[in-house]
Image (tube, rainbow, N blue to C red; front, side, top):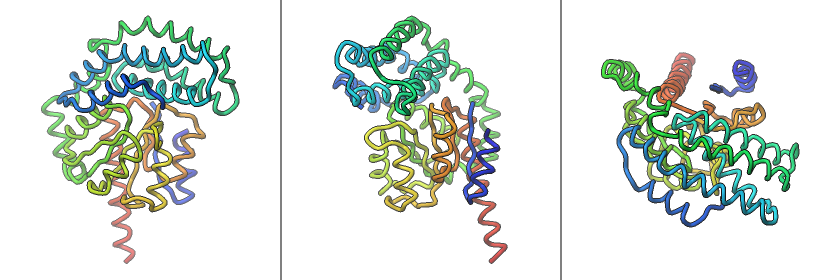
Length: 311
């Protein structure tokens, strides 16, 4: 699948690699803001905070679902619930809990079918989601720092010898990056900041949605954008179009890495066709981010070399 997509869009003059592996309550917004203002320094702290906050996040989503099951089915509320579940699924996977994130992702996929018309978001559908949610609640007790696969994945890269090797080999590439990362989940903002810092990226800024990213880009002036897909009020796809159409302070040729829980072919083709440099399916980790940045930098340097030779 990956080679087919790359070949197709290379033919169109685009180069991309595909890597496969809201309405919220005021109290929920407050928890998000408090988490964003609290600094952490190591991945274990991030995972610990995520584990302690997940029950409250789950309860918020459960209340949103209950409101739809017991009351009228409002399309806007359905979209808000979809956005919340999409965020939770991606974060659970990135925090190292695939057994929980994958089950949420299955529900998200069914909501995707509703938007395409394959399923109808009626009382029957929402009732089935409520039953699945009840089963999911029993998995919450297993979402603990001891069970996080993220920390196990990071262990080899946190060794002194390997970290020195990576920084010695890729120091010029990573230190030259000015990365603006966009995701509506504070835990993932913190995780990405830690990963980029450990790789040697000295300039990192984060944003919660496309509008905030465009505003911060005025002063930050990134040379690499990493963004999530599902955000509100401006999602990743709209942000991508703004940048490529020259409607922002960001260079129209700035490399953009897309992250998403959704991995359907039509979604991937859509963003690749509009000019993303890399498409990574969550969960991401240090190795996948490092590989993507290095490959983008290598592609750019080869292009510059060809231009110099032809001049």
